[in-house]
Length: 93
Image 1: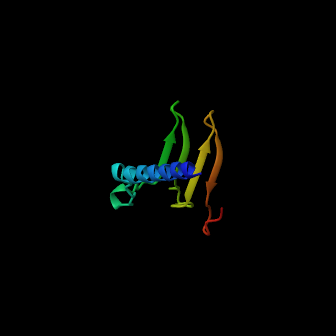
Image 2: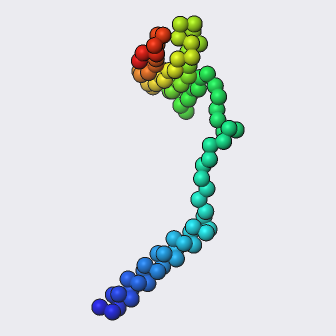
Image 3: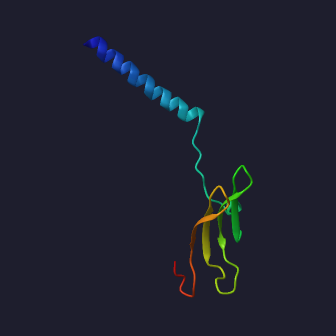
């Protein structure tokens, strides 16, 4: 029984020392949001490896829908399959 307790204590100590040393060797850095990392655009397009766009995010520029947000997803054929947007004066979904 004493041998099992000694092994358990050694395993716990080794784990604790390993975690502590990894904290010193590989310190975690927080990702702080800074103004120079903000992307400002009226549209963002994400393309797949085949060159077709898959995701569109942005705001409309038309007079009746100006500055209302949209999110569009396309399939492998390039057809629009999902469109989330706000429309009208009250920004209805």
